[in-house]
Length: 292
Ligand code: FVH
Image 1 (cartoon, protein in one colour):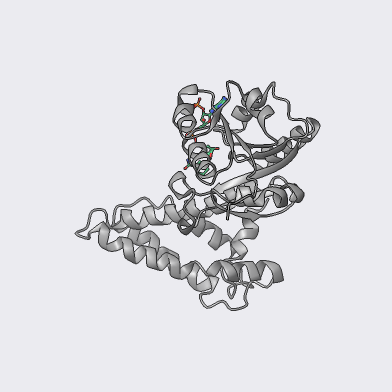
Image 2 (image 1 turned 90 degrees about the horizontal axis):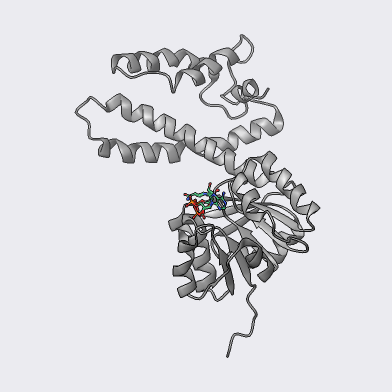
């Protein structure tokens, strides 16, 4: 039987690496797609594959109700959308922003008569349109808008709605990426320790990967501690023991000729947290030292 379900038409502003990947998934699934990019050369390949090429952002915005924006940064969103008529449009902004920028953009959209959803993409372009790659997009802002377009937005990558506060998608995005940088910092230090030794980095890599996976569930205990304000439940490696162990790490770094600059700030926080009364805690208390 012929598929008679009408596919939502999409306007996409921004055909960089990410925008192009998004565009291809909508085209491949039969969604009518209008595209615009500041540098027109990037439009040609998609137009050849069936996208309608708009000559201006204003023309692209006028073409459809659902407007997806995926540009470099918040300033480029300002520039691209200047002079467009957003009245009664559904604006979905996948440009990486700070939570404050996302909230301000939501208000900016509201003043222009648009409904607004902010997105934080947890994927790199090759993961787009590849569900098994595990990429997804955080969305926050209008729940009604999210529900209305969930199916269309779910085509490039899975969707995770995190609340009406338009800043929450960006906040979740940055939180996860911040944790990732912590992991990268730790692995950089680990590789530095063996850099001048007769140890193949390729033999350390799988050990590191497996160890990080084994340690990752610790985040659940951290969450439980924060919810209960009891930072001791279930702790098997307590703060007193871990602080006592830090000189081993620092001495090893020194012996290997490795700067401790990635580890020291964390160790310093652990040391500051340790008092006579809380040696039985785990590491959750460090979080309260960070929050100002
Ligand atoms: N690529 C990635 O790995 C990450 C994965 C996670 C999410 N990010 C965010 O996605 C946004 C777009 O990233 P991108 O990878 O598409 O970035 P570029 O390939 O550099 O393309 C940038 C597009 O933005 C256009 N643009 C830049 N400045 C302006 C401006 N002032 N006015 C209008 N458009 C502008 C640029 O146009 P052009 O240079 O081709 O003319 C591209 O279309 C981003 O927020 C990432 O953080 C990607």
